[in-house]
Amino acid sequence: MELELKPLNLEGVSESRPIVMSGPCSAETEEQVMKTALELAKNGVRIFRAGVWKPRTKPGCFEGNGEKALPWLEEVKKETGMLTTTEVATSAHVEAALRHGVDILWVGARTTANPFAVQDIADALKGLDVPVLVKNPVNPDLELWIGALERINNAGIKRIGVIHRGFSTYEKKLYRNMPMWHIPIELSRRIPQLPIFCDPSHMGGRRDLIAPICQEAMDLGFDGLMIESHCAPDAAWSDAKQQITPDVLGFILSHLIIRSTTTTSDNLITLRHHIDQIDDDLIDLLTKRMHIGREIALYKKEHNMTVVQTHRYNEIIDKRGAQGILHGLSGDFVKKVFEAIHEESVRQQLETINKP
Image (cartoon, rainbow, N blue to C red; front, side):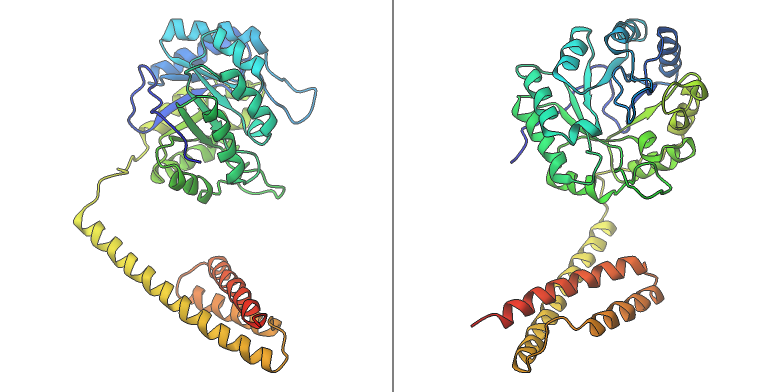
């Protein structure tokens, strides 16, 4: 399905990269919200984010102030002129947020993973014109992410964007949520007009990772950033370790290198042409390799041999992995490439053997 989209058209917000949304993980008190908002406004932020309803892993944690906090966001808009945005997970959240003038809604990662919940939100949005941002699902499932976008779009919402916040993993890694950049890159390839934001706070889970993740997102051509900022991060009621002060945010933003996403020179065009030629050669070589593989399959059929010869497969993986490392390639990369080549070769050999 092709999405019918329009530009976000955020009033009073420059479309130059990066578009920045910032504010505390949770709207804790009116004083905390206003103090943070005023400091962010001084640092040039034009969109204020704050969690009003907080989905927590276990009960007993602070789960947000709910609708009680929405008038605080109204006051932020009145005092600073900033747009406001908050997370919604139910139709009741949508109705309450819009009733209090919230400008942008976002769907959280846990909600995106639940088609029933997304449909409930979509039904509440029918007939409205409000920007909606959809975070990636907690698990690395591109089709599930796209499905959520389709549900929102089917409701008539055309101002849609996405937020990449990384993917959960059971293993303990450097990141709180693994970036897996290839997934949003593929999403952008499929839906090139879709604005993409990065959430380095949830991706990194640590203050010291926010700056490098921001830069990586900009290097990949992302449109904007959603960064958690708190007037007193160490005292935050939720996710304290990943929040930064508005002044630190301003410092990070001022040091970002923003590269062009469209400008191309004759030299770049020439280099891309060389890559295209090499890619053509790769396809030709793979075709020749598969042809030889089919000849091997006929030999195996004639001599009643199994298609998969484990010792030969291990030999290929080990040999090519070591060869790749000698040439400056990642061993994991080479392994994945030859695993994919072997898988296709096995498929074609089985097809050849089973032909009457």
